[in-house]
Image (cartoon, rainbow, N blue to C red; front, side, top):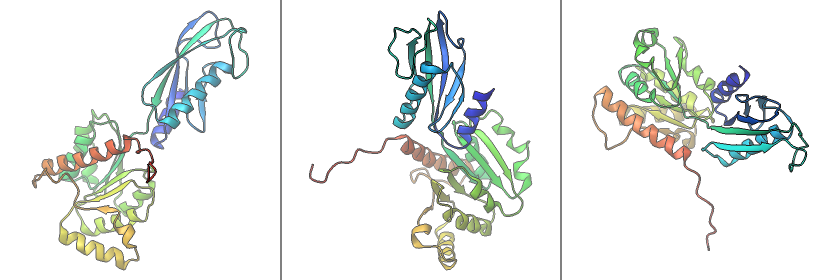
Amino acid sequence: MEWVKAIQTLRAGRRAGVLVTVTAVRGHAPREAGAKMVVALDNVWATVGGGNLEALAIERAREMITADVREPELITTALSDKAPYRHGVQCCGGEVTMLLEPLPVVPSVAIFGVGHVGLELARILARHDIELHLVDSRPEQLTADRLAVLDDAVASVHVHNVPVLPELVVGELPPGTHTVIMTHDHAEDAALCDAAIRNEHLATIGLIGSRAKWARFRRKLAEDGNSAESIARITTPIGVPSVTGKEPAVIAVSVAAWLLELFIAERRPAPAHREANA
């Protein structure tokens, strides 16, 4: 179905939209109950009947996207030549009710390194409505048997098996992705950090490791021509400071809590600007 593919396209591209569904029809109307359409700021897929009916739905859907409305809305429109119209006359004689359901942008997370901690972190994050990317240079870490614990995931899970140059995956991630670097190899971590800070479209870059490891990385990144501002985009250590412990499950809980705080901050509207002398 066209509208299903449209939702998948928007979600994969981390673009907001609205699903419009004809929920009730009285009398004559261009489409029957159940007809669907997907609206984005720059595109429309499928149709709920055209004319003023559809134009009103598209107009309101785009207002909802712009205002970041999260609650569904109902619109009822009369199809009569005596009804007021903004986008031309439709005189089918019926009445149509449409449900407008927001399709918000969901968080995107990439875990580089699906070892003990990475898999525990994936298990926690998979219970949330997110786009979850799992990347590892070791094929045995990404086998179907090992990832079977994610079979009931709420998240959309994307597995990237890249034995050579996993840092190339950084450039393929959707804009606004939160990146967590926790591979088995410090050289691989360093290459990933370098690739990540050169990608301006990532939301955050988190690195697991000790202070000594970070001191070496920071020096090497600077030697490779990265600015102090770019290097400062990397957060290390990652996790909630109050949750301590070295067990993989404990570290994963701490990092997951840190990420959830970032997700909440993304959903929170920006504070209104106030004049300095107000």
